[in-house]
Image 1 (cartoon, rainbow, N blue to C red):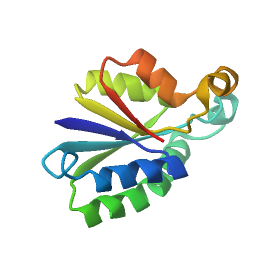
Image 2 (image 1 turned 60 degrees about the horizontal axis):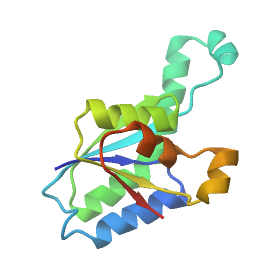
Image 3 (image 1 turned 120 degrees about the horizontal axis):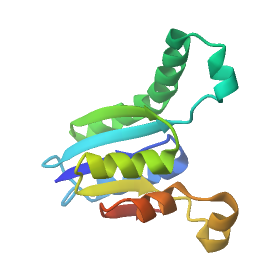
Image 4 (image 1 turned 60 degrees about the vertical axis):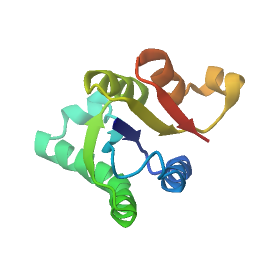
Length: 140
């Protein structure tokens, strides 16, 4: 099974990874994992005054901050994974990659704001569930 693991380095990501570790009977090393982080884009006016190399370096540094402890987690669990960093809106980017990458499952940590919280703040998880045809496992 191809599994997309969306991460942002938050405590919700840590809970999701703990779930993955605790359920190795069905989420074990026999699956193909892709770990994705989505870095929010620099505002267009700010990006216009930066050279492309500086901007690319910033995006890579932000992704590496998220990936460093997760690489360590996957190594300790004996799991191999591809690590992918994208720039854009997190919900849209995760849903698009899940579909285009032909993943069998997308895993996300969820804040669990509830309906009212989603109306006020929006939710990456809500967007992914709404815009992806791939089954989504939300871990709270």
